[in-house]
Length: 68
Image (cartoon, rainbow, N blue to C red; front, side, top):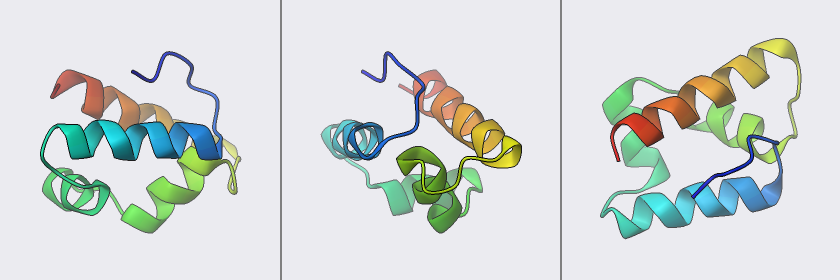
């Protein structure tokens, strides 16, 4: 799961699928862990690719991996 931390639509789909397999959703995971879903979606998909978005993406993926 999520072997490459390169923002893309595929990464967003992979993260969503992984969370659904764990019995949650992207929205629920974001609420539970204090992330803004819209910002996470833009960061993961690459529609926002500035330094703050990259940091957000890495932090989010780290949290997903640590709670797996």
